Length: 307
Image 1: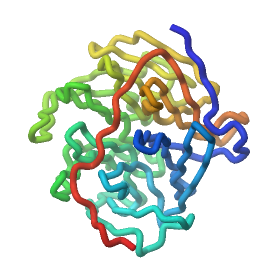
Image 2: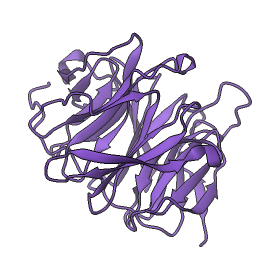
Image 3: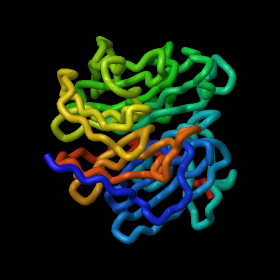
């Protein structure tokens, strides 16, 4: 199967420090993603290359939209609703905290997150200083009624890899810290959102890189960004590696399907602290002959009066 890889913004000279959380909005034919330490959300329409960006009051790591276009974001101090306006800065008036967990350690924030296929928003937390290898991170669910769950998974160091099978019977979750490097699968109850029967899906200690952000394609296969491994890895629902795509960056961070036919895998990347190339920290469009599925918007009603 042939593969083509193109940089999404070939003329953009400034790389992202930590590009993350790509999300395709089909009604806009646009890709959104964040640069976490820059506190920025970016938007590009690939058809014409138009680029916009917004700066938030604090770091945003993951996000979704509701059907009206209001953002639901996982940030440093909790989950927020946010409105995007014409101005490049999201002001306090456009930014409202919806819920916040009791962080058990200092220096924590939300990390990887997305909606399940029923529109609940799932997101995990982590201690930002990865050198501490703290397992204070947890996984939470923010339901359509606007209620944040108690921790549903505890003991995570660097929560990542959230994805849901096309039939909503399986949830995937990874821990990408160098001391973990594992992906787990859970039985998922679509009606209630309950998870159970955790089992090891992939031990990434057997493969190059660490299991960062992920996406599931229309065949139910799990694509993970092998951070520090410079590649995408595709695993079948049985956990067997069946495809490997080398990338022009060392630290791919998350992938998401998009494009008119959902046949493009958009990949964000992190710029390493040493030996960075001119490709590191940019976003790429990978056409690999496989189609994905649209992301489900948040099913709840976010505050309308934010401006």
